[in-house]
Length: 230
Ligand SMILES: [Zn+2]
Image (cartoon, rainbow, N blue to C red; front, side):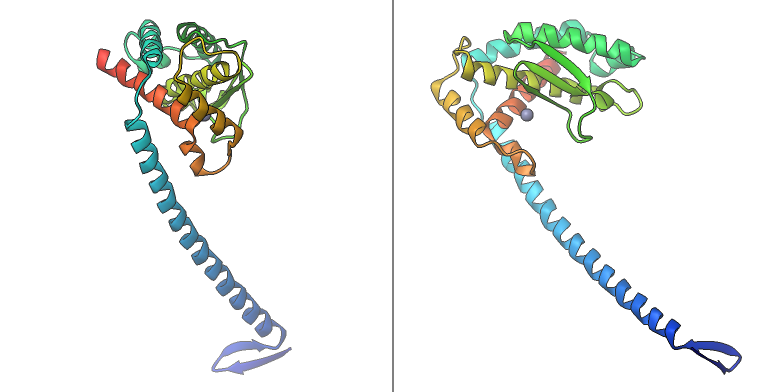
């Protein structure tokens, strides 16, 4: 390594100069990677927007079966019993995780009875941070952090939407696997069968699958009916 004194400044050449060039090259490489990531992210955002638009079209143009209307009305009655002053007011009055859990268990059981579907087990547990809940084999699992912990809880409307969405999945399962006591149209059962058999789990496009569209449609219809009655 050589040090040169030029105009009072010590300039180091040799090993350190090489290291500086390597660092600059690496910095440029990282910058290029970051730009590429941003480009991909922007492209993905456009796709996500398109998916949301198509999902909204599908939900808005959905036609209810007679049994959907009956199920929706029964669900709204339960919501009125449990939330006479609205969702947020009720949730705010439940200060502890224990109180919230007890409340939700009772609400889920009452909604399930109104929808005439069986839920054998309800678990509040740690799920993926972006997963609100899931339902299969008559077992409903809910994200404890998002439902019970007042510090990390999502808005109450989102919680109720999730419960209705998951209960509707239980209805779909029972309609397909245990007869169809509700009387859903055969075309609807066919849609759900195909959707179940080809289910994809991990992309934004999952929301466009028949069983997901149906679960979101049901939850939004019930919430709309609840809002209009209030
Ligand atoms: Zn779902």
